[in-house]
Image (cartoon, rainbow, N blue to C red; front, side):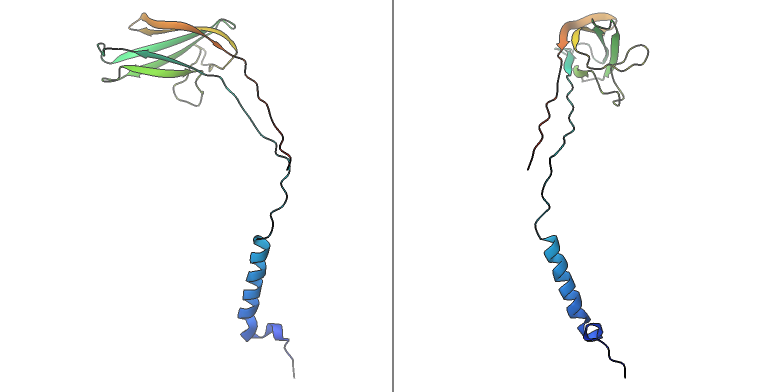
Amino acid sequence: MITVPSFLQLKQWPLAGWLGGALMMLLLLGPAPAAHAQTWMVSTTAQIKLGILDKYGQLGPYTANFIVHSEKTGKDYLLVKELAKGQTGVDVLFPTDPSDPEYFKAETGEAASAIPGRYTWECRVKGLKAVGGRFTIPEVANDVTIINK
């Protein structure tokens, strides 16, 4: 005669499954592992908002040609925005992320970057300077705090 241990008997499998599940729940609901010091990734980028507005909406559709000149590098960066009927103005950010289909770029295709320094800008409409000005992109820095416990 062959003796089968009691834990392998078929009628006791539901009890074994229930006990195994309960044990697993206790392990999952137990205390979480202790947190370790966190290392953060950080980035800071300065951007300037430039804009133009046909205050009384007299022009109708027009093309706004933004030109930004870096006094530090001597490079000019261009961005062309087409304004449709009913759209009287537009705001743009300088520099624009190069992944954006419409970004500020030099004649060589180089994307503008936030190099600290002084800049002048203008927006031309129908070949004439409509607005312009100057701005400074500040130096930026990142501080990282390590959190222990």
